[in-house]
Image 1 (cartoon, helix red, strand yellow):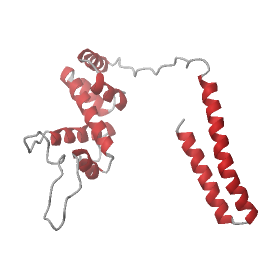
Image 2 (image 1 turned 60 degrees about the horizontal axis):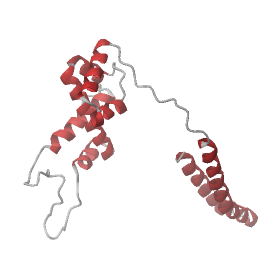
Image 3 (image 1 turned 90 degrees about the horizontal axis):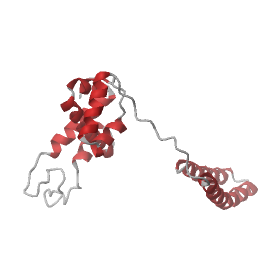
Image 4 (image 1 turned 180 degrees about the horizontal axis):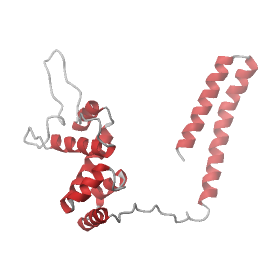
Length: 195
C-alpha cells in the first residue's frame, strides 16, 4: 500500500483484502472481532466509543467506512474472477480490462458462478464489454408529473424566501439579504441534487 504507482483499482483491492483479513480475526466466543465490540478502559476514562473494522481502516486510509466496505466487495469479485482466470485478475488490477468497480461490486453481491466465469473468460479473450445501461423510455406521463411536483416545490421555496429577500432589500441590509439569498440558493441546490 505504500507504493505510489498503484492504480486506483489496486488500491481498492488491497484495502478490501485488508478489511476482509481483519474481519476474520476472531477474539471472542460470539465470533466478533476486536474492533466490533465496545471495550472498557480504566474507570477514570469511562467507555471508549465503538470502533468498527471499517471505521478503523477508514481512518488509516483516509477514506469513508463505506468505501472500505465497497472495496471488500470489489476484492471478493476480483478473487472470484482470479480463481477462474489468473490472467483476467491481472488485467483487472492493471486497469486494462475496462471493467468498472460497480460491475465488480454487483458481481460480488449477486453474481452467479457462471456469470463470474463468463466475465473472466471474456476479459481473458479480450471480448469483455461493459454492460449497457437500459435505454428503455420511462412510462408515459412520468416527466410531466415530476415537472408538476417540482413546480409546486419551487413555488413554495420562492414564496418562503422571496419575502425574506424583499424585506432585506427594502431595509437596505446587505448582510441579511446575502444570508436570505444563500439560504434560498442552498434550498435550490438540494432540490437539484434530489433529482
